[in-house]
Length: 362
Image (tube, rainbow, N blue to C red; front, side):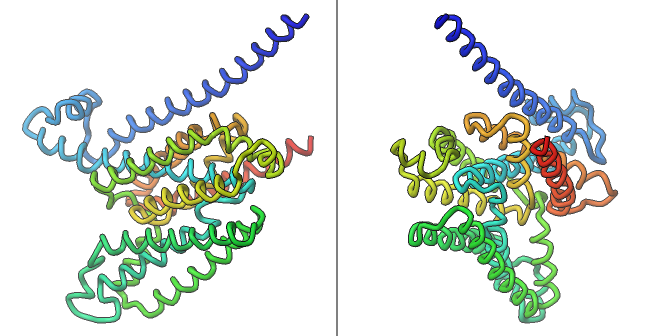
């Protein structure tokens, strides 16, 4: 009887793991299919055979080969890579924040990081363009992209530091941390409104465009930075996945099992914030990915962080890539992807909440 019971338990566990693995495999296949379709979409009509040749050899065929190669490597692939990396980064950052704070509303945006980053970027734009002056300096657009990126990242980390100090100094509950994040967001939002009020027309236009979120301005050098930070953060999160599972059971249970809750939560928040700050500083504000992707994965395969973290990365990348296709090709003009992700993410998130409520009611 004991042997039969053990065999039955093993079988159930294997089935449990198989379903989750198949979900991850299916999501990865969907991401690959979207990426392949995205490479071909555009005003320059290229066959898949030509695209594959350009990717592997760097050269196109015929008299237009050099132009086709430029289109693939300099116009299409960077945007596709940017969508995958930013979606994966925001998805896993949101999953970790929700898990360690045990709050389904936690995300890089509800903790104030996005508005803090927007304030820093707007300050960089204002300084770089001479936003209070006129003439050539004001007409030059974003005068210092490096300054904009650095200040956006710096202020996002400042907001994170305030949240971490609150956690460490007051032993705040996870719910209080999210409320504090909303307060921090409101402070930086007012500061952002002030900068926009005092800016001239050129600086104001640059600020507003940056806040929409866009992948068009990312270069391969930018993507290398995002890739390095994303992979480093993902490795750390996966290493701590079992600790995050323990924290899902509550602080008392985690402490009883010997987990240093404060340290795990603070480091997890700091790494998530750094990951978000890097993405937002380069791409601008892209809403709902960090909130939506983990919820989708939880609804489908549960909260086991051994699968949730990877699933959130893949689903975040899928949503971003799908949003990028819509933003690039659905309206006849390129619409900033931040607008599309918010337009898609809001209704989807409401649908998930309503469906979850109906299941709970049954």
